[in-house]
Length: 438
Ligand code: RM4
Ligand code: MN
Ligand code: MN
Image (cartoon, rainbow, N blue to C red):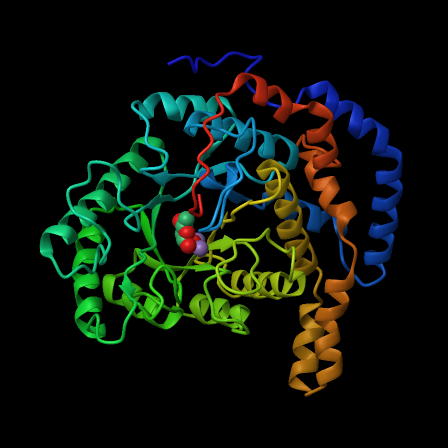
């Protein structure tokens, strides 16, 4: 196949570039870190403990997020972008190399189909990566596919189409088993565009019946994540449209079924952090798709528009973990579409934004917050969150990256490496200029 692993192939950014960039910034970094440590110590926060926590943060990379995304109008491909799953893994390895916080890749089938999954697993592991949940795709027809998903998949009125969609999900589980993944995320585009087109209850019943079969194919140590989204591609009704339907379905299916929250999949203004708290309370918070959104499922870079919301979400995640450390382990992933930036840079920057939200959530004075809440001291309760959000935690974040062998300034290293320029010379350029999100 030509994807033999060799030393020169592994690790996209030359180690000496990272070392030189880190050395150049080290003295400033040390001074900033010491200042932050002293500042936080005055409020009883141990910065070392925060850095330890940051070092354990793991956010999965979406294989599809390594390629230039697009809108339904157009796509502007980037020379040097990956053309297959092996090249996507190479790019993910760069993000992990520089951030140390993205050790797993989430694959999407059939987009990431390959002939030899043993080879893919070895290749991925040789690049220092593993696998997060696999994703099925029954929202699109594939060449040669027998039955169309135009009118739905797992909830389709035709039993034969439902069988095809069920078989695809089970095939994804089989691939995931070969790769060492432990979960499958199921998002369907099923719904309707016209009032009257579909019966809400029948469609949901058919979905549940199909999902029961997918659920039955899960190995003992696997989970299935149900991902809701309010609209698109269906513009009138969607079968799994919100977290209410999602948790009901997860409860119907059983313990291995949990809900996945994609930050772009809610109506504007919805209190997503509260959804997180509710799902966690009932043991159904399975996973996360990080991105940012202004209008709908925009798939913008995490934290680029609303870092306060991202912080409030992490605040709930930290709370949930504190309440139930044995059970609350949501799988964190990014799900973004990079339309106008280099995807690697977007993934680096998004990692930083997610890490920042977590770092700030970790320094909330929870005892004081509880006290203010119980005393109905509204302003001080609010400020307990605001003060943490307004703290510049970048030195702690950089320290966590450094201790994991990463970069003090990931984007500077990436740019210094000329990685993309090199790939533009060596990778085939197969531009798909048509519309479509990926
Ligand atoms: C959907 C949803 C899914 C993702 C696809 C590409 O809107 O977010 O998670 O797999 O897009
Ligand atoms: Mn998603
Ligand atoms: Mn989405």
